[in-house]
Image (tube, rainbow, N blue to C red):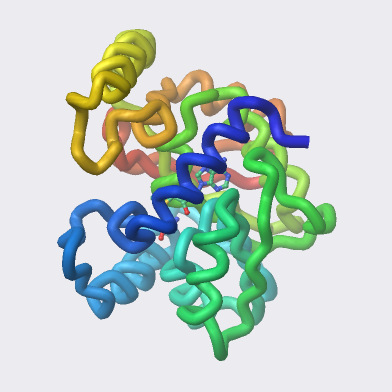
Length: 238
Ligand SMILES: C[S@@+](CC[C@H](N)C(=O)[O-])C[C@H]1O[C@@H](n2cnc3c(N)ncnc32)[C@H](O)[C@@H]1O
């Protein structure tokens, strides 16, 4: 059952997918004329960030799972390295549009309640990956729940590779988020709606991430670019 928090996330992302899915997946694109070739290529780049020069790599290449797959650009990249890919997203609109992008590849797209990986059997995933999703989740407890899900789903020898916003100042960010959302409601915020809590998400200290990993039966084995918006970490079963 979706919590009120995940319900607002779903409403936000359904609307963004209807407005301009590619732009909201990658806001460095041109809003009016997104370069879809470059967009799809970056999916492969993100897979490289997760798997190349990583402190650990999955023991097998059977199944990769992506949390928050959007239009499926990363799923597409993952199909070059894994037999099967499952992409989960909170937005049915995103998934609908992703179908065309992953059409002839072994990718299954699944709708999630916003905090779990429904239908994914325990200890079956060789890789669980997520990029530019945790950074948009305002409720840290939802991030904890996904980390627990990654721990449940990983096969022995599997790897959880994830990016989140590790910029310092998590409390300050919560205050700023409230102020910016108020400004947005007055019609004076960012014209693309990026001042809303469901876009601004949360900053999460490393200690909180490490505690969540431990709670999920996982152990962090690597960290890249700490204290950044695009901080990456890798974890395996403890
Ligand atoms: C910025 S896009 C990134 C998409 C994809 N990871 C990529 O980089 O191509 C964020 C995606 O996360 C999804 N999302 C947001 N909150 C989510 C949640 N709680 N559970 C699952 N997906 C979520 C959105 O619908 C959107 O498709």
